[in-house]
Length: 134
Ligand SMILES: [Zn+2]
Image 1 (cartoon, protein in one colour):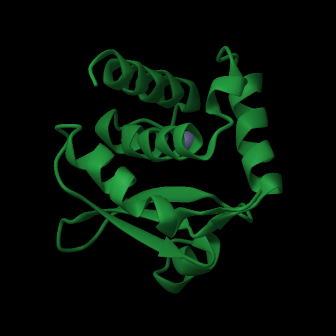
Image 2 (cartoon, rainbow, N blue to C red):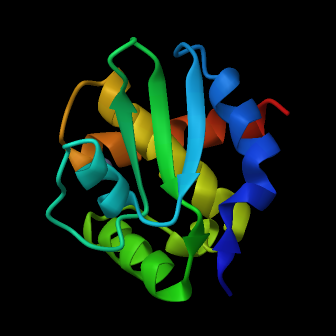
C-alpha cells in the first residue's frame, strides 16, 4: 500500500512541534532527489524517502517524498533491520513508519551526525517516550 504523506501531515506536524527541538516546516515533494538537485544539494541515491535541511533563512525543513510505495518502505525497513534495531514489525504501519522516518531525519540535525545507527536509536527513544506518555 502506498502511503500519501499529506494524509498524515497534521499528525507529523504535531509530532515535530512537540519534540522541543525548534520549529520544523514539513514539505512534501514528488521526488526528494530532484528537489535536492534543484537547490544544488545533489544526492547519490534515488527514491530517497526524506531529508532534513536548513534553509538559508535559518528555517529547518523536512522534505519528504509525498508518495511512499511498498518498495521504498521495504528498502527503509531493510536498512533498519540490517542496522540491528529490533522489531521492524513495529514500524510496518503507516503512522509508526512515518514517525520513525521523520524523527530519524530530525535526529541527523539534532545530533549533528551522519551515523544512521545513532539516529535510529534517537528516533526510537522519542517514539517510546511518546507512547509511554499519551
Ligand atoms: Zn539517516
